[in-house]
Length: 37
Image (tube, one colour):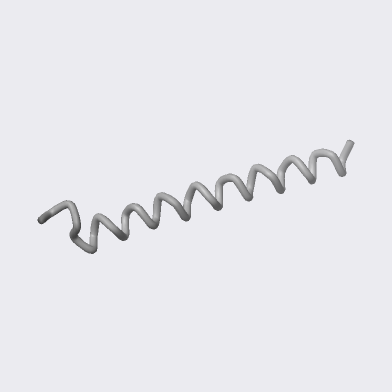
């Protein structure tokens, strides 16, 4: 029953959020780099 605990679900959501934010940041960096060049 442990695998379906709310805590584990929260961690999965956090991981997903962090990955999404990370990709967004990378995309923004790419854009600003192109703007500087």
